[in-house]
Length: 427
Image (cartoon, rainbow, N blue to C red; front, side):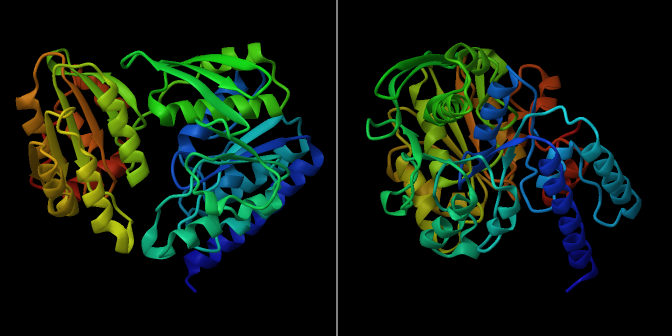
């Protein structure tokens, strides 16, 4: 066991103790969001909707492991694990916060896992509502099977007061044998989507039905994945006693964030669908469906390798290639070796025109030269070895919009430069 691991464990125990005492002293409801895909978008939709009516504490990014989740409740940022002074100051400030007036009644937390046995560490939270967004392939080099993923992701339901499940994206055999509420596109769900109308890339109207009444919502989030995030937020609002008027007004405040179906203006009057934060099979299909639904003279999909799929990686890349519809795509551009070897040939077999690159910079430069007026471009891919957001830099109408892309800190730009030293464009 390394010094770093020992230090992290000690910090986790101290921070968790502080969270317990914070909740004992103050009345705080906790909404937890778990699942293989869609956690962050769903967390933000819930938090922003709830926050419209009363103060809610949450974190915009991905503080979702054992060390960072407690920081969210105290509104702290994570310093280096070796910065002893910074951690001492955080612990001291947390003690003051415990004894002071706490300004929040609700905390919305994302709980993540990279492998078996991790989510049980969050039992101390005892969430009031836990939302499960999906059970799908994730971190398969550690989980190995979908059964193992499901077993891990459903652990928090054992220590949550109430469960809300997206039954569209959870295979039926994994639905737990407990009382739970559900949401989805079919009438079998407790709350089901009886109507969805999308207006190109301007947003969509949703009608949610619970059998007794309907709730009409307008949202700028795109596609079925956006609709599901909004549904989760609306149902959580209802369970927490929010009025339909508050929910409707709150949903109107929910906007896309960097790397998650964010629409940006591109060169030559094009539109760019920035969905570059990460990629998994279910998320790539959902992103392609958004692109397919758009009326445009040219549709281009930039698809990067999907990392962390383990032994199912090759088959899943082939399946995504086969999912590429030649009647709705004018060009498919891949980034990364695995996408080139498996996704690209399958897309070609499906009738698509395909070009493959090892670098996002090469891919972006190529797409820039192919853009027709009014084109719509989707960018989707994983992180290391892909970084498809970098391809979008070549396509932005306003170069300053690169600040709206994911992973633009000095830290991340340094990593990208080390992985693609010959292809990093001049600032």
